Image 1 (cartoon, rainbow, N blue to C red):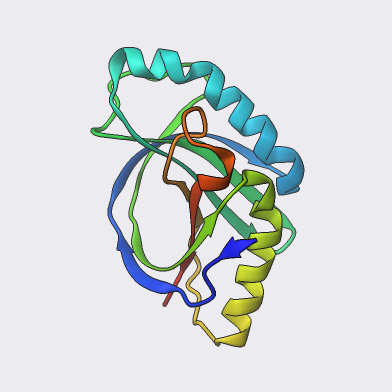
Image 2: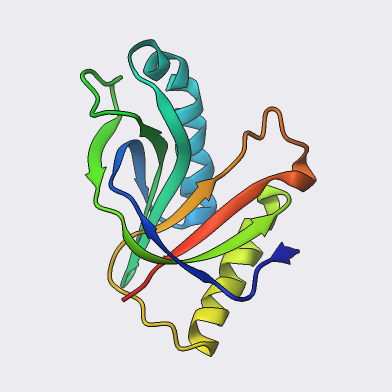
Length: 153
């Protein structure tokens, strides 16, 4: 697994974000949410410019919230049924970078959690981000780049 061990501090910008939200174990909810998003991307593109693909996730006690969605160039004027909108506030994040298959994400996320504890990185109560930097439809699997961003105090 090709994962950076030393995070870079970045400021994520405010982002117009449309998404499908699921609550439950991520290994179940993430694939379901992405399947729904990919089906409606053509409809989103009829009215809006997609600037990126990303997921937001948060664990609060027993509640696990997963949002699969796309960043837009501007606030949406219309949305397909089932899609929600938020102006994600962004903020300070510790960025880790995974290069390779999305199938490595569960292991990479686990390692990121270990590094956060080892390095005593102060987290803030906000959504974590997975930012999918390149397009899996046109990028060889071993060259996929995913940024794993941890909300940092």
